[in-house]
Image (cartoon, rainbow over all chains, first blue to last red; front, top):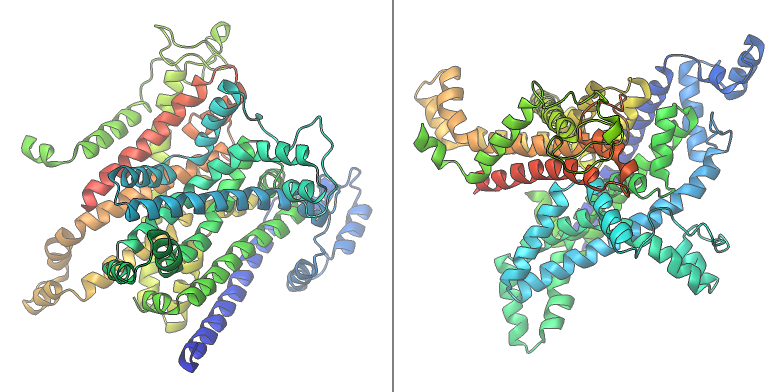
Length: 346
Length: 263
């Protein structure tokens, strides 16, 4: 990386950081104001016997008697220190709930994303590599399916076929109710059962994960396939392919070692921008498959107007999505600085 | 007239017919889609009187999905119109505002495009009541980053187009320029954008309603119907299949007709 690239890169980092802070301020203020615009007193709702003295005490304890600006600063401080309060309905600590539900969503999202990338990359590479009309039709079908068919309906159909008709997969949940889950180390049942060397539990976890992961993989697969295919159809890539062929390289080395590297910069960006959609899709998938993840927890909190859960978990998820977008932007820049520079110039 | 109609693609004609038929469901259905008039026949499959069967609460499924399609189309249209209006206002601010505002809008749009509408809907539902209008607002605002980008592309293209400068040099007034010079050239792009926004609006709205954020669980809308019938998935799968076919079919037709428009 030369000096010009480094300066450009650092400027980009500065811009992204400034934007991240702006988004944090906008999102946190919106949530803070939204919570305060709710009609009724959430503290009175929380207390079983809401006499004025107890309500006043509770308000003082939570800092709700202080000026609005101080409350906002306190909210920011508690968010960044991980002190997210207790759920108004269950009384459990929000941080503990997040630690319980988030790994489930992460496991599902990563499984869906990985499967989507594999399907998308293989379809695009084989369709372009073999110039097969059938594979091109399949990639068009995949793109259309991923972009037009609602994920929750695909989930319901998958349940009908995989669970009701074939009986291969369970009808929902994350693990067999008849089994004791593996010791909790990472929160991921797949990894925890592997760490414990409990193969039976590992396969039970895989069995529960297959249908939701397939449903979730369709959107990233469609995105990756269409972007990579468009990239691989670039005339410059065709010239590079001929040059590599002339040097005597085999098709596997040409496609998977050279062309995929050149074509992967926009794919990485697409993966980043799809991450938000993936989390949104995870919320719907969790609902269809009764998956105990953060999405269902968040929706339930909004419907019940659970103040601390809403203002901390929603903000956390929004910042996570923005963070992933920025990180993948940088990764795309590191993989192929020239391609990202020309895209920025456009 | 017939010649002009024939020039349109088959997908466009099917899409128009589909939407018109769906909207007809708002004024007429074979039975009342809300009334639980056939409780003794609940979860019954196909019959001569009830072509798509009867749901778990004794309501005619054909009437429900027909009215549901109409409501889905109507909400999708409202959301896409809202997105276009919000995007146009944002574009105006970006073009006329100070540099800092321009940069802020562009930065927020670049990030906003990756934020799912669902989260926006959840934020709005914290302080607004659960109703179709709240969900339409969420879907309309959620589509703004994409709508803004597309409108901006059209705007930048037209601003520097030679024929616009030539028309200006010939002394065309604003109205003539907009309706007789610019509009014929951007009509295809705007129609294509409208179709995409319509499809995205329907997709996002159905997702929000499937999560039960509509408020009224009996409101006939395809996402809500799918949510309600999920309880009978293993008893009468067709109750879940039909609303999904109508929803996906509509989205597929809009998508395919858009590919034709673009080409």
